[in-house]
Image (tube, rainbow, N blue to C red):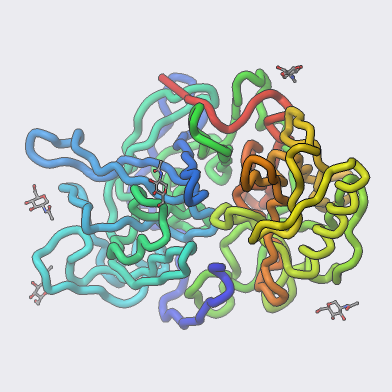
Length: 451
Ligand SMILES: *[C@@H]1O[C@H](CO)[C@@H](O)[C@H](O)[C@H]1NC(C)=O
Ligand SMILES: *[C@@H]1O[C@H](CO)[C@@H](O)[C@H](O)[C@H]1NC(C)=O
Ligand SMILES: *[C@@H]1O[C@H](CO)[C@@H](O)[C@H](O)[C@H]1NC(C)=O
Ligand SMILES: *[C@@H]1O[C@H](CO)[C@@H](O)[C@H](O)[C@H]1NC(C)=O
Ligand SMILES: *[C@@H]1O[C@H](CO)[C@@H](O)[C@H](O)[C@H]1NC(C)=O
Protein backbone atom coordinates (compact mmCIF):
# COMPACT_ATOMS: atom_id res chain seq x y z
CA UNK A 1 0.00 0.00 0.00
CA UNK A 2 0.86 3.61 -0.42
CA UNK A 3 2.03 4.23 3.08
CA UNK A 4 4.21 1.16 3.53
CA UNK A 5 7.19 2.16 1.42
CA UNK A 6 7.42 5.80 2.29
CA UNK A 7 10.73 7.49 1.95
CA UNK A 8 11.80 10.68 3.51
CA UNK A 9 13.13 13.80 1.87
CA UNK A 10 13.86 16.98 3.71
CA UNK A 11 12.30 19.89 1.89
CA UNK A 12 14.02 23.23 2.40
CA UNK A 13 10.94 25.33 1.95
CA UNK A 14 8.62 25.87 4.86
CA UNK A 15 5.09 24.64 4.34
CA UNK A 16 2.83 27.57 3.62
CA UNK A 17 -0.70 26.62 4.41
CA UNK A 18 -2.77 28.90 2.26
CA UNK A 19 -2.34 30.39 -1.13
CA UNK A 20 -1.81 34.11 -0.78
CA UNK A 21 -5.17 35.68 -1.50
CA UNK A 22 -4.54 37.06 -4.96
CA UNK A 23 -7.93 35.96 -6.29
CA UNK A 24 -11.13 36.87 -4.47
CA UNK A 25 -13.65 34.09 -3.97
CA UNK A 26 -16.82 34.34 -6.09
CA UNK A 27 -20.15 34.19 -4.27
CA UNK A 28 -22.47 31.25 -4.96
CA UNK A 29 -25.36 31.96 -7.35
CA UNK A 30 -28.70 33.27 -6.02
CA UNK A 31 -30.63 30.19 -7.23
CA UNK A 32 -30.60 28.28 -3.96
CA UNK A 33 -27.17 26.68 -4.32
CA UNK A 34 -25.60 25.39 -1.14
CA UNK A 35 -22.36 23.95 -2.48
CA UNK A 36 -20.47 22.45 -5.38
CA UNK A 37 -21.05 19.01 -6.86
CA UNK A 38 -18.97 16.54 -8.84
CA UNK A 39 -20.07 13.03 -9.69
CA UNK A 40 -18.44 9.71 -8.83
CA UNK A 41 -18.35 6.74 -11.17
CA UNK A 42 -17.09 3.24 -10.51
CA UNK A 43 -15.09 1.09 -12.86
CA UNK A 44 -16.38 -2.41 -12.07
CA UNK A 45 -13.25 -4.15 -13.39
CA UNK A 46 -10.57 -2.20 -11.56
CA UNK A 47 -12.90 -1.30 -8.64
CA UNK A 48 -11.67 2.28 -8.85
CA UNK A 49 -13.84 5.34 -8.31
CA UNK A 50 -13.29 8.31 -10.55
CA UNK A 51 -14.75 11.71 -11.29
CA UNK A 52 -15.09 13.35 -14.69
CA UNK A 53 -14.00 17.02 -14.77
CA UNK A 54 -13.57 19.57 -17.53
CA UNK A 55 -10.36 21.57 -17.54
CA UNK A 56 -8.70 24.18 -19.71
CA UNK A 57 -9.82 26.37 -22.59
CA UNK A 58 -9.95 25.64 -26.28
CA UNK A 59 -8.42 27.72 -29.02
CA UNK A 60 -9.73 29.74 -31.98
CA UNK A 61 -13.42 29.15 -32.64
CA UNK A 62 -13.57 26.81 -29.72
CA UNK A 63 -12.67 29.19 -26.89
CA UNK A 64 -14.38 27.98 -23.70
CA UNK A 65 -15.98 25.14 -25.59
CA UNK A 66 -13.24 22.72 -26.38
CA UNK A 67 -12.19 21.78 -22.89
CA UNK A 68 -10.17 18.83 -21.77
CA UNK A 69 -12.41 16.13 -20.29
CA UNK A 70 -10.37 14.37 -17.66
CA UNK A 71 -11.44 11.29 -15.76
CA UNK A 72 -9.59 11.35 -12.46
CA UNK A 73 -9.31 8.47 -10.02
CA UNK A 74 -10.38 9.69 -6.57
CA UNK A 75 -7.66 9.48 -3.92
CA UNK A 76 -9.02 10.54 -0.53
CA UNK A 77 -5.45 10.67 0.77
CA UNK A 78 -4.04 12.36 -2.34
CA UNK A 79 -2.37 15.76 -1.91
CA UNK A 80 -3.01 17.27 -5.33
CA UNK A 81 -4.45 16.69 -8.78
CA UNK A 82 -2.24 15.27 -11.52
CA UNK A 83 -3.04 14.55 -15.14
CA UNK A 84 -1.22 13.01 -18.04
CA UNK A 85 -0.13 16.14 -19.91
CA UNK A 86 0.78 14.29 -23.11
CA UNK A 87 -2.87 14.67 -24.07
CA UNK A 88 -3.38 18.06 -22.45
CA UNK A 89 -3.57 21.29 -24.42
CA UNK A 90 -5.18 24.51 -23.33
CA UNK A 91 -4.72 28.19 -24.01
CA UNK A 92 -5.30 29.09 -20.36
CA UNK A 93 -2.66 26.75 -18.90
CA UNK A 94 0.08 28.58 -16.95
CA UNK A 95 3.17 27.03 -15.37
CA UNK A 96 3.80 28.09 -11.76
CA UNK A 97 7.31 29.54 -11.31
CA UNK A 98 9.71 27.93 -8.88
CA UNK A 99 10.14 29.80 -5.63
CA UNK A 100 6.73 31.49 -5.90
CA UNK A 101 4.20 31.58 -3.05
CA UNK A 102 1.95 29.21 -4.97
CA UNK A 103 4.85 26.83 -5.35
CA UNK A 104 5.48 26.84 -1.60
CA UNK A 105 1.80 26.39 -0.83
CA UNK A 106 1.82 23.29 -3.02
CA UNK A 107 4.89 22.05 -1.07
CA UNK A 108 6.92 22.40 -4.24
CA UNK A 109 10.66 22.20 -4.24
CA UNK A 110 13.32 22.91 -6.82
CA UNK A 111 12.93 23.91 -10.44
CA UNK A 112 11.88 21.81 -13.40
CA UNK A 113 12.97 22.62 -16.98
CA UNK A 114 12.48 21.09 -20.41
CA UNK A 115 14.35 21.16 -23.72
CA UNK A 116 11.51 20.20 -26.04
CA UNK A 117 9.05 22.62 -27.69
CA UNK A 118 7.00 24.33 -24.96
CA UNK A 119 3.60 22.88 -24.03
CA UNK A 120 1.80 22.06 -20.75
CA UNK A 121 4.24 19.78 -18.96
CA UNK A 122 7.27 21.17 -20.82
CA UNK A 123 8.22 24.62 -19.50
CA UNK A 124 11.28 26.17 -17.90
CA UNK A 125 11.71 27.55 -14.37
CA UNK A 126 8.67 25.64 -13.23
CA UNK A 127 7.86 24.65 -9.65
CA UNK A 128 8.62 20.97 -9.08
CA UNK A 129 6.04 18.91 -7.16
CA UNK A 130 5.57 15.21 -6.57
CA UNK A 131 2.80 13.48 -8.46
CA UNK A 132 1.91 10.20 -6.76
CA UNK A 133 0.07 7.16 -8.05
CA UNK A 134 -1.09 5.55 -4.79
CA UNK A 135 -2.40 2.45 -6.58
CA UNK A 136 0.97 1.34 -7.91
CA UNK A 137 3.04 3.39 -5.45
CA UNK A 138 4.71 5.37 -8.26
CA UNK A 139 6.16 8.79 -7.62
CA UNK A 140 7.49 11.39 -10.05
CA UNK A 141 8.76 14.93 -9.71
CA UNK A 142 6.80 16.97 -12.21
CA UNK A 143 6.01 20.59 -13.05
CA UNK A 144 3.19 22.43 -11.30
CA UNK A 145 0.79 24.39 -13.47
CA UNK A 146 -2.65 25.93 -13.16
CA UNK A 147 -5.70 26.13 -15.36
CA UNK A 148 -9.42 26.68 -15.18
CA UNK A 149 -11.68 23.84 -13.99
CA UNK A 150 -15.45 23.71 -14.56
CA UNK A 151 -17.69 22.53 -11.73
CA UNK A 152 -21.41 22.77 -10.95
CA UNK A 153 -23.27 24.20 -8.00
CA UNK A 154 -25.98 22.17 -6.28
CA UNK A 155 -28.76 22.57 -3.72
CA UNK A 156 -28.37 18.96 -2.59
CA UNK A 157 -31.09 17.77 -4.97
CA UNK A 158 -30.05 18.80 -8.45
CA UNK A 159 -27.30 20.56 -10.33
CA UNK A 160 -27.77 24.30 -10.76
CA UNK A 161 -25.14 26.32 -12.67
CA UNK A 162 -21.67 25.83 -14.03
CA UNK A 163 -18.73 27.67 -12.44
CA UNK A 164 -15.22 28.23 -13.61
CA UNK A 165 -12.65 27.72 -10.89
CA UNK A 166 -9.68 29.71 -12.21
CA UNK A 167 -6.05 28.90 -11.33
CA UNK A 168 -6.66 25.32 -10.22
CA UNK A 169 -3.18 23.97 -9.45
CA UNK A 170 -2.18 20.55 -10.73
CA UNK A 171 0.82 18.58 -11.71
CA UNK A 172 1.49 17.72 -15.32
CA UNK A 173 2.60 14.10 -15.24
CA UNK A 174 4.19 11.78 -17.75
CA UNK A 175 2.07 8.87 -19.09
CA UNK A 176 4.01 6.20 -17.15
CA UNK A 177 2.33 7.45 -13.98
CA UNK A 178 -1.04 6.15 -15.27
CA UNK A 179 0.06 2.56 -14.69
CA UNK A 180 -2.62 0.59 -12.85
CA UNK A 181 -5.33 3.23 -13.30
CA UNK A 182 -8.54 2.12 -15.02
CA UNK A 183 -8.20 2.53 -18.75
CA UNK A 184 -9.89 5.70 -19.90
CA UNK A 185 -8.77 7.64 -16.82
CA UNK A 186 -6.12 10.35 -17.17
CA UNK A 187 -4.85 11.02 -13.65
CA UNK A 188 -5.84 11.29 -10.02
CA UNK A 189 -7.53 13.88 -7.85
CA UNK A 190 -6.58 14.38 -4.22
CA UNK A 191 -9.02 15.10 -1.38
CA UNK A 192 -6.55 15.15 1.53
CA UNK A 193 -6.11 17.87 4.13
CA UNK A 194 -3.74 19.89 1.92
CA UNK A 195 -4.08 23.41 0.50
CA UNK A 196 -3.94 21.96 -3.03
CA UNK A 197 -6.72 19.40 -2.55
CA UNK A 198 -9.93 19.64 -4.58
CA UNK A 199 -12.18 20.75 -1.67
CA UNK A 200 -9.70 23.39 -0.45
CA UNK A 201 -9.08 24.81 -3.92
CA UNK A 202 -12.79 25.06 -4.64
CA UNK A 203 -13.40 26.73 -1.27
CA UNK A 204 -10.72 29.24 -2.17
CA UNK A 205 -12.35 30.14 -5.48
CA UNK A 206 -16.01 30.08 -4.45
CA UNK A 207 -17.56 31.36 -1.20
CA UNK A 208 -19.16 28.31 0.35
CA UNK A 209 -21.44 28.11 3.41
CA UNK A 210 -19.09 25.51 5.00
CA UNK A 211 -15.74 25.83 3.28
CA UNK A 212 -14.16 23.09 5.42
CA UNK A 213 -16.77 20.41 4.70
CA UNK A 214 -17.09 17.93 1.89
CA UNK A 215 -19.03 14.72 1.56
CA UNK A 216 -18.88 11.58 -0.52
CA UNK A 217 -21.62 9.20 -1.59
CA UNK A 218 -19.69 6.33 -3.17
CA UNK A 219 -21.68 4.16 -5.60
CA UNK A 220 -21.54 0.36 -5.70
CA UNK A 221 -22.33 0.43 -9.40
CA UNK A 222 -22.99 3.19 -11.87
CA UNK A 223 -25.53 1.37 -13.98
CA UNK A 224 -28.43 3.42 -12.64
CA UNK A 225 -26.64 6.71 -12.00
CA UNK A 226 -23.62 8.24 -10.33
CA UNK A 227 -22.35 8.97 -6.86
CA UNK A 228 -21.57 12.38 -5.43
CA UNK A 229 -18.85 14.64 -4.12
CA UNK A 230 -20.46 17.61 -2.34
CA UNK A 231 -18.17 20.50 -1.44
CA UNK A 232 -19.30 23.18 1.02
CA UNK A 233 -21.74 21.29 3.27
CA UNK A 234 -25.31 20.00 3.06
CA UNK A 235 -28.13 19.49 2.47
CA UNK A 236 -27.62 16.05 0.94
CA UNK A 237 -30.70 14.42 -0.58
CA UNK A 238 -30.66 10.83 -1.80
CA UNK A 239 -33.98 10.13 -3.52
CA UNK A 240 -36.31 8.40 -2.92
CA UNK A 241 -35.41 9.03 0.74
CA UNK A 242 -36.98 12.42 1.49
CA UNK A 243 -34.87 13.62 4.44
CA UNK A 244 -31.76 15.80 4.41
CA UNK A 245 -29.03 13.32 5.32
CA UNK A 246 -26.66 16.07 6.49
CA UNK A 247 -28.92 16.36 9.57
CA UNK A 248 -28.79 12.64 10.30
CA UNK A 249 -25.08 11.94 10.48
CA UNK A 250 -23.36 10.22 13.38
CA UNK A 251 -20.06 11.96 14.05
CA UNK A 252 -16.70 10.92 15.39
CA UNK A 253 -13.52 12.99 15.70
CA UNK A 254 -11.05 12.92 12.83
CA UNK A 255 -7.72 12.10 14.42
CA UNK A 256 -4.33 13.51 13.58
CA UNK A 257 -1.64 11.01 12.82
CA UNK A 258 1.49 12.87 14.00
CA UNK A 259 3.66 11.36 11.26
CA UNK A 260 2.98 11.96 7.58
CA UNK A 261 1.81 8.95 5.56
CA UNK A 262 2.71 10.64 2.26
CA UNK A 263 5.51 9.21 0.09
CA UNK A 264 7.57 12.41 0.54
CA UNK A 265 7.36 14.75 3.49
CA UNK A 266 9.26 17.14 5.72
CA UNK A 267 10.26 16.34 9.26
CA UNK A 268 7.48 16.93 11.78
CA UNK A 269 4.72 17.01 9.19
CA UNK A 270 1.53 15.23 10.32
CA UNK A 271 -0.41 12.97 7.97
CA UNK A 272 -3.01 14.69 5.82
CA UNK A 273 -5.05 11.51 5.43
CA UNK A 274 -8.29 10.87 7.32
CA UNK A 275 -7.95 8.76 10.50
CA UNK A 276 -10.79 7.79 12.83
CA UNK A 277 -10.69 6.22 16.29
CA UNK A 278 -12.03 2.68 15.98
CA UNK A 279 -12.04 1.36 19.57
CA UNK A 280 -13.41 -2.14 18.94
CA UNK A 281 -15.00 -4.36 16.30
CA UNK A 282 -18.20 -6.31 16.94
CA UNK A 283 -19.66 -9.19 14.97
CA UNK A 284 -23.41 -9.58 15.61
CA UNK A 285 -22.83 -7.76 18.89
CA UNK A 286 -19.80 -9.76 20.08
CA UNK A 287 -16.59 -7.78 20.53
CA UNK A 288 -13.46 -9.27 18.99
CA UNK A 289 -10.94 -9.82 21.77
CA UNK A 290 -8.16 -12.03 20.44
CA UNK A 291 -5.87 -9.28 19.19
CA UNK A 292 -3.72 -6.65 20.85
CA UNK A 293 -6.01 -3.67 21.34
CA UNK A 294 -3.07 -1.25 21.14
CA UNK A 295 -3.05 -1.86 17.36
CA UNK A 296 -6.13 0.34 17.20
CA UNK A 297 -4.29 3.40 18.51
CA UNK A 298 -1.85 5.56 16.54
CA UNK A 299 1.51 5.54 18.30
CA UNK A 300 4.19 8.28 18.45
CA UNK A 301 5.78 6.95 15.27
CA UNK A 302 2.46 7.21 13.42
CA UNK A 303 1.98 3.43 13.35
CA UNK A 304 -1.41 1.80 13.99
CA UNK A 305 -4.93 3.22 13.92
CA UNK A 306 -7.63 3.33 11.25
CA UNK A 307 -7.74 5.38 8.09
CA UNK A 308 -10.24 5.73 5.28
CA UNK A 309 -8.96 4.97 1.79
CA UNK A 310 -11.24 3.87 -1.05
CA UNK A 311 -8.08 3.32 -3.12
CA UNK A 312 -8.12 -0.04 -1.31
CA UNK A 313 -11.01 -1.97 -2.92
CA UNK A 314 -11.60 -3.94 0.32
CA UNK A 315 -10.78 -3.12 3.94
CA UNK A 316 -7.28 -4.23 4.92
CA UNK A 317 -6.74 -5.48 8.47
CA UNK A 318 -3.61 -6.24 10.46
CA UNK A 319 -3.24 -10.05 10.39
CA UNK A 320 -4.23 -10.53 14.02
CA UNK A 321 -7.38 -8.40 13.64
CA UNK A 322 -8.17 -10.14 10.37
CA UNK A 323 -7.90 -13.60 11.96
CA UNK A 324 -10.10 -12.53 14.87
CA UNK A 325 -12.75 -11.16 12.49
CA UNK A 326 -12.80 -14.20 10.21
CA UNK A 327 -13.00 -16.59 13.14
CA UNK A 328 -15.89 -14.76 14.86
CA UNK A 329 -17.73 -14.20 11.57
CA UNK A 330 -17.51 -17.89 10.65
CA UNK A 331 -18.76 -18.85 14.13
CA UNK A 332 -21.72 -16.45 13.95
CA UNK A 333 -22.52 -17.49 10.36
CA UNK A 334 -22.68 -21.15 11.46
CA UNK A 335 -25.33 -20.28 14.07
CA UNK A 336 -27.37 -18.80 11.19
CA UNK A 337 -26.97 -22.11 9.26
CA UNK A 338 -24.87 -20.43 6.58
CA UNK A 339 -22.67 -23.04 4.88
CA UNK A 340 -18.95 -22.28 4.59
CA UNK A 341 -17.23 -23.33 1.36
CA UNK A 342 -13.63 -23.32 0.11
CA UNK A 343 -12.12 -19.84 0.28
CA UNK A 344 -11.41 -17.87 -2.86
CA UNK A 345 -8.31 -15.62 -2.64
CA UNK A 346 -7.79 -12.92 -1.45
CA UNK A 347 -10.69 -13.65 0.89
CA UNK A 348 -10.51 -15.91 3.94
CA UNK A 349 -14.13 -16.93 4.52
CA UNK A 350 -16.57 -17.84 1.77
CA UNK A 351 -20.11 -19.16 1.91
CA UNK A 352 -22.63 -20.90 -0.30
CA UNK A 353 -25.18 -18.46 -1.74
CA UNK A 354 -27.79 -21.24 -1.47
CA UNK A 355 -27.74 -20.87 2.32
CA UNK A 356 -28.02 -17.08 2.30
CA UNK A 357 -31.27 -15.20 2.19
CA UNK A 358 -31.35 -11.67 0.88
CA UNK A 359 -32.51 -8.54 2.65
CA UNK A 360 -32.81 -4.86 1.82
CA UNK A 361 -29.20 -4.44 2.99
CA UNK A 362 -27.79 -7.38 1.06
CA UNK A 363 -27.24 -11.03 2.04
CA UNK A 364 -28.40 -11.91 5.55
CA UNK A 365 -25.07 -12.33 7.35
CA UNK A 366 -23.76 -11.25 10.78
CA UNK A 367 -23.40 -7.46 11.06
CA UNK A 368 -19.98 -5.95 11.61
CA UNK A 369 -19.74 -2.80 13.75
CA UNK A 370 -16.77 -0.47 13.86
CA UNK A 371 -17.18 0.87 17.40
CA UNK A 372 -16.04 4.47 17.75
CA UNK A 373 -15.64 6.75 20.79
CA UNK A 374 -18.06 4.67 22.89
CA UNK A 375 -20.08 1.46 22.56
CA UNK A 376 -23.22 3.28 21.44
CA UNK A 377 -21.46 5.03 18.54
CA UNK A 378 -20.70 2.65 15.70
CA UNK A 379 -20.58 2.32 11.93
CA UNK A 380 -22.69 -0.73 11.08
CA UNK A 381 -21.75 -2.80 8.03
CA UNK A 382 -24.42 -5.08 6.53
CA UNK A 383 -24.13 -7.87 3.98
CA UNK A 384 -24.12 -5.59 0.91
CA UNK A 385 -20.94 -3.97 2.24
CA UNK A 386 -19.35 -6.94 3.98
CA UNK A 387 -19.83 -9.61 1.31
CA UNK A 388 -18.42 -9.93 -2.20
CA UNK A 389 -19.96 -12.18 -4.84
CA UNK A 390 -17.09 -14.12 -6.44
CA UNK A 391 -19.30 -16.35 -8.60
CA UNK A 392 -22.89 -17.49 -8.87
CA UNK A 393 -22.57 -19.91 -5.95
CA UNK A 394 -20.10 -18.21 -3.64
CA UNK A 395 -20.05 -15.04 -1.54
CA UNK A 396 -16.97 -14.11 0.48
CA UNK A 397 -16.31 -11.89 3.48
CA UNK A 398 -14.83 -8.84 1.74
CA UNK A 399 -12.00 -8.02 4.14
CA UNK A 400 -8.38 -8.67 3.32
CA UNK A 401 -5.29 -9.60 5.36
CA UNK A 402 -3.07 -6.50 5.41
CA UNK A 403 -0.04 -8.33 6.83
CA UNK A 404 1.45 -8.57 10.31
CA UNK A 405 3.41 -5.33 10.16
CA UNK A 406 1.34 -2.71 8.35
CA UNK A 407 1.87 0.99 8.93
CA UNK A 408 -1.88 1.45 9.57
CA UNK A 409 -3.77 -1.40 11.29
CA UNK A 410 -7.12 -0.84 9.55
CA UNK A 411 -7.53 0.72 6.12
CA UNK A 412 -11.25 1.04 5.44
CA UNK A 413 -11.66 0.30 1.72
CA UNK A 414 -14.10 1.28 -0.99
CA UNK A 415 -16.46 -1.71 -0.79
CA UNK A 416 -17.22 -0.91 2.85
CA UNK A 417 -17.78 2.82 2.11
CA UNK A 418 -20.38 2.40 -0.63
CA UNK A 419 -23.94 3.68 -0.20
CA UNK A 420 -23.36 5.75 2.92
CA UNK A 421 -23.15 9.55 3.09
CA UNK A 422 -19.67 10.26 4.47
CA UNK A 423 -18.85 13.82 5.50
CA UNK A 424 -15.38 15.18 6.25
CA UNK A 425 -15.25 18.36 8.31
CA UNK A 426 -11.77 19.79 8.78
CA UNK A 427 -12.74 22.90 10.75
CA UNK A 428 -11.40 23.57 14.29
CA UNK A 429 -12.81 20.35 15.74
CA UNK A 430 -12.29 18.02 12.78
CA UNK A 431 -14.88 15.33 12.51
CA UNK A 432 -16.13 12.55 10.29
CA UNK A 433 -19.88 12.11 9.88
CA UNK A 434 -21.57 9.04 8.46
CA UNK A 435 -25.17 8.12 7.71
CA UNK A 436 -26.70 4.70 8.19
CA UNK A 437 -26.60 2.52 5.08
CA UNK A 438 -28.75 4.20 2.42
CA UNK A 439 -30.02 0.73 1.52
CA UNK A 440 -32.04 0.82 4.77
CA UNK A 441 -33.92 3.76 3.24
CA UNK A 442 -34.40 2.09 -0.17
CA UNK A 443 -31.86 4.52 -1.52
CA UNK A 444 -28.26 4.30 -2.73
CA UNK A 445 -25.40 6.38 -4.12
CA UNK A 446 -26.38 5.69 -7.74
CA UNK A 447 -28.67 8.37 -9.09
CA UNK A 448 -28.65 11.23 -11.52
CA UNK A 449 -28.72 14.88 -10.54
CA UNK A 450 -30.02 16.91 -13.44
CA UNK A 451 -30.69 20.54 -14.23
C1 LIG B 1 -1.78 23.15 -28.59
O1 LIG B 1 -2.60 24.16 -29.13
C2 LIG B 1 -1.86 25.19 -29.79
C3 LIG B 1 -2.83 26.27 -30.20
O2 LIG B 1 -3.88 25.74 -30.96
C4 LIG B 1 -1.13 24.57 -31.00
O3 LIG B 1 -0.35 25.57 -31.64
C5 LIG B 1 -0.21 23.46 -30.49
O4 LIG B 1 0.40 22.80 -31.57
C6 LIG B 1 -0.99 22.45 -29.67
N1 LIG B 1 -0.04 21.51 -29.07
C7 LIG B 1 -0.25 20.19 -29.02
C8 LIG B 1 0.82 19.39 -28.34
O5 LIG B 1 -1.25 19.67 -29.46
C1 LIG C 1 14.36 26.17 -21.69
O1 LIG C 1 15.56 26.87 -21.68
C2 LIG C 1 16.54 26.33 -22.57
C3 LIG C 1 17.85 27.10 -22.38
O2 LIG C 1 17.61 28.46 -22.38
C4 LIG C 1 16.02 26.41 -23.99
O3 LIG C 1 16.94 25.83 -24.87
C5 LIG C 1 14.71 25.65 -24.08
O4 LIG C 1 14.15 25.77 -25.36
C6 LIG C 1 13.72 26.17 -23.05
N1 LIG C 1 12.55 25.29 -23.04
C7 LIG C 1 11.31 25.71 -23.18
C8 LIG C 1 10.25 24.67 -23.10
O5 LIG C 1 11.01 26.88 -23.37
C1 LIG D 1 -12.51 -0.31 -16.48
O1 LIG D 1 -11.13 -0.54 -16.40
C2 LIG D 1 -10.72 -1.66 -17.19
C3 LIG D 1 -9.26 -1.93 -16.83
O2 LIG D 1 -8.47 -0.80 -16.98
C4 LIG D 1 -10.97 -1.37 -18.64
O3 LIG D 1 -10.59 -2.48 -19.42
C5 LIG D 1 -12.44 -1.05 -18.84
O4 LIG D 1 -12.67 -0.65 -20.17
C6 LIG D 1 -12.92 0.04 -17.90
N1 LIG D 1 -14.37 0.12 -17.98
C7 LIG D 1 -15.01 1.25 -18.25
C8 LIG D 1 -16.51 1.18 -18.28
O5 LIG D 1 -14.44 2.31 -18.44
C1 LIG E 1 0.46 -4.93 22.64
O1 LIG E 1 1.27 -4.14 21.78
C2 LIG E 1 2.01 -3.16 22.50
C3 LIG E 1 2.69 -2.28 21.45
O2 LIG E 1 3.28 -3.05 20.45
C4 LIG E 1 3.00 -3.82 23.44
O3 LIG E 1 3.72 -2.83 24.13
C5 LIG E 1 2.22 -4.68 24.42
O4 LIG E 1 3.11 -5.38 25.24
C6 LIG E 1 1.32 -5.67 23.67
N1 LIG E 1 0.46 -6.34 24.61
C7 LIG E 1 0.30 -7.67 24.61
C8 LIG E 1 -0.65 -8.21 25.63
O5 LIG E 1 0.87 -8.39 23.80
C1 LIG F 1 -38.39 -0.37 0.85
O1 LIG F 1 -38.94 -1.15 -0.17
C2 LIG F 1 -39.47 -2.39 0.28
C3 LIG F 1 -39.87 -3.23 -0.90
O2 LIG F 1 -40.05 -2.45 -2.05
C4 LIG F 1 -40.63 -2.11 1.24
O3 LIG F 1 -41.14 -3.32 1.73
C5 LIG F 1 -40.11 -1.28 2.40
O4 LIG F 1 -41.16 -0.92 3.27
C6 LIG F 1 -39.42 -0.02 1.91
N1 LIG F 1 -38.77 0.60 3.04
C7 LIG F 1 -38.71 1.93 3.22
C8 LIG F 1 -37.98 2.40 4.43
O5 LIG F 1 -39.22 2.72 2.43
